[in-house]
Length: 324
Ligand code: SF4
Figure 1 (cartoon, rainbow, N blue to C red):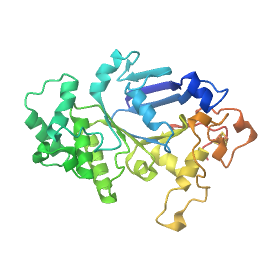
Figure 2 (figure 1 turned 60 degrees about the vertical axis):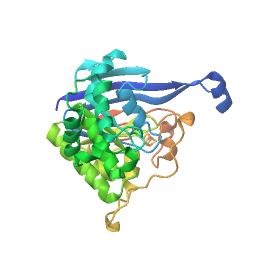
Figure 3 (figure 1 turned 135 degrees about the vertical axis):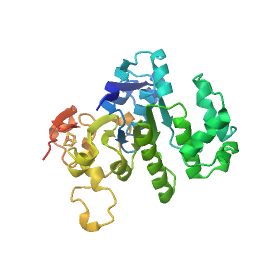
């Protein structure tokens, strides 16, 4: 496997005005850790699933990787090139595309589909000799007729808008597409179509796909490797099949145990996830997951577990994680 994107010890902080913090949390520091010491590698031509509940930091991580948010620490490298300044992100922005969660809202309502597909060429100052032919070719690639190029976003169905989002992401022949909840808001049958389309395109074009989602069934189905985030920290990472077969981290175990099972006899015996993810404004000390962890011990309340290599391409941030 060849690394496409290397993330090492990435941290993203949000500094709040002292006055606001003083009002919200008297005595607290004016800095919030949105992401802390995240390390992961995206390989070429693989599908990587980034999983976590709402508020876990998934979208923040994607935005930081694309240079859309300033980082507070760590190193990023894309195709072997360190990303050390805003200028160094310029080639990455041509080679990596983001699909945002709300397909229709992410498309400017005043532009036709044809104009939306041409926009990445203008933004990145790439030659576009025949915009109509380009639009027709991109639309054909995602299974839409060329006539769609003349429509506005509000004239598209949810599935068509998502396909246009895929076409737009592919416009500059990216090496990486980051898709934020690519099936959110779609009917189940359309969800399957969109996922199958993305998987087929990924195989045809040899690109890497990072799928951000809280939908475990989806990542289990489409991803080669996964990483599980909780309150801005990486809890577990490894090959998808192995993680689902033997989850090492109590959070992963609880998420998997919470999945709806069509056959109740196959339901896992582990405890399902309970309670709500805490706010980053009120991050628990020690292990971030301890307030919801069924295995929490005294050590977990004051000592933060590091992400530990467990062998077999797996790692987990739990004092007691092991591969059984
Ligand atoms: Fe649970 Fe402790 Fe492991 Fe955290 S370190 S996941 S609280 S057992």
